[in-house]
Length: 425
Image (cartoon, rainbow, N blue to C red):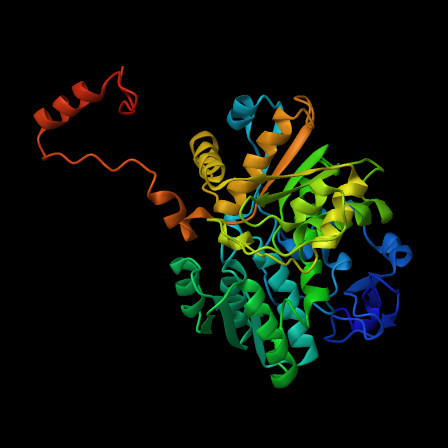
């Protein structure tokens, strides 16, 4: 087992003023109130990590343990991560792309979203720091992941969510034994309250006082993309933006892989996707400003409906540094993309995934993506948890009596119509 001294983490550092702090449950700089980030000794890491070492390990997110801020042998999330990178040939043909891939976290374990990655790391740190109660402010997927991983780790769990999140995500959290509290207001109202609770009660809020460690888990999404492409970067990756956790960390992951010699010095354009009803980052990107004006979310894509993203500025920075871009998708466009992905590839994405695909389609139409380039679309959550988003627009099932002649009549009636039965001539 590795000790703290044997890890490659050195300290926490303010992203703005550069002030450093010892490793602790701290997320805001005391000097300038900027966000803190985990810092590593890459020179020493480069001598210790290799492709062969990583490839020999179990297929979970901890295969990249040297690049993560956890001491000792990881005990949380043993089955999380290393989700499929699906070569989407049929969908690619629809979009005119020859090398289209879906990074499919709809099958991530145990709660079917990318949040299992960040929570595995955050709860590992909570245990290191000796916390007994873990918590989060969430629009749904994070709540379920925290509840499940807390149950496995034997920790108390309290979840805070805004009213109106999908029923499946509330059930998914309470099922694991968490205490769930819904707040009258939007996510930003919930987050403000949770910051006060974290200070008063001394709980481990994975996306507040443990945020520097929590966000590092998102890097594993990028590590896996590169490894699954044969230790190379795609030309483009399209990623949803909510609070702004995953996109900057995928960009950081790509830089770290180069820094420690695991991939060549290639480039990838990183693109941001937001729902039109909650697009403060894309609004700023299109205006050419660094100032992100908060909005009041109004979209079916509830898992990315955050009107005042904590790391929105860093999304803008990562997108611009990579030469990428960003677009929005309306609710009808999101639903259309969900249906298209399901019909072509058998992958049922929640609205956040529909958003990234819809935006990828716009980037192709704008010729920002060339048909011969390698493109990865990030699908970060499973549609079975958000059935109400698409159920109303789907055709109703046919109902007939259990008689062959009734089926024959239906078959004859529908054959050749706009909605023929499968197998119709």
